Image (cartoon, rainbow, N blue to C red; front, side, top):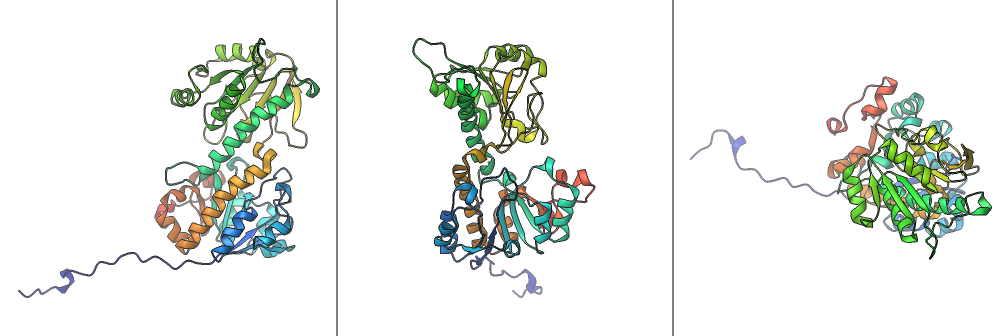
Length: 394
């Protein structure tokens, strides 16, 4: 039988052909923020990238704060340069903190920028500069894995939970001006009491360590699901409660340590502990407000630096330093390197960022500017900048 319209004849199926791996040139600059000790790539990460044919330009001194020398980077295959301009002209820039205003001027056009950003700390000039240069910018904290989790946030939260207990132990001892308690349990001695606000990753890690040391733990959170998950992981001896002001105030008045680890709502933490509640706490007790990155959850919290982290209010010792993971920069850098090097290797295999985002839709949440177009409502609206959903652009 003759078919008049050959357009309906069976056609050969067109299968997706994998692109040949692309060699990338990556720039690793020195972090400009004085409180930032982490680095986005370690020598181990650079070695694996160079082995796959990529080139990494390392600004001289990029790893010093994390205790990595230029020699280690060089021996791993990194190209060391004292010229910051050369680093910021690379097609792919990886750094921990978002570029400063001076660093934005050094960026070329149509580059890829991978960094962490705090949405509350960026301004119109930052967004407009990236937009005008046609940059594709990704936020570490928003990039998801294939299981829908944010690996950067989880890794840094685990470190923050660990460090919150370490800081509490340092501050509790007599020589630091604390109450002279040991956080660890001692036979025949009543255990120290720790109140943890938040049952997410930070709170769970902090609770696990404190329980293991023999402390008495009380955890408060707005989510029953998170509290149930915490009890399943740690044990049913942990006291849990929703954010009931009366019960929370009583627990704070009896504890030696209070840790703020609540998750932000719309980019900012809610103040759940009033100045009056802090006044009821014992003299020389400790507050470690890990939530300070997003405004804090204690009314008495003030943003401080790692150079001068401690202060007293209402007789209570406070520690409220953003980026608590920088205290253990080597550990934090290694965790960050695992994410960065994996991202770059996958990007190289996919050939370009567009193909990578099409193959890995879970990366898309991390893109806030794509080739100069703002793709996130929360980035665009505060500054009156139009935005387009990334799915439409792809």
